[in-house]
Image (cartoon, rainbow, N blue to C red; front, side, top):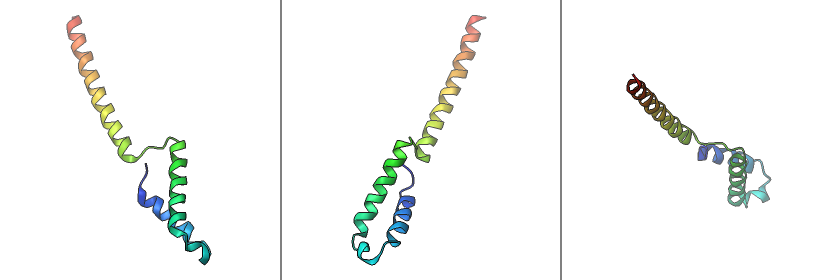
Length: 78
């Protein structure tokens, strides 16, 4: 998921815009807004920066290993 602080900030801004009677339910409303945003982002298949960086690192390692194996194979074929 994306940064939890960002969700909290968005939810706070929305709940602060509510009239006073609705502010009494602020905690519940805030959680519902966070859940809606989280689900919406899941539907778009958004990944966190951390997950992206992990996958990028794995890809780099796999590419390096592939290059090494291709070199070894080329040497064996000579």
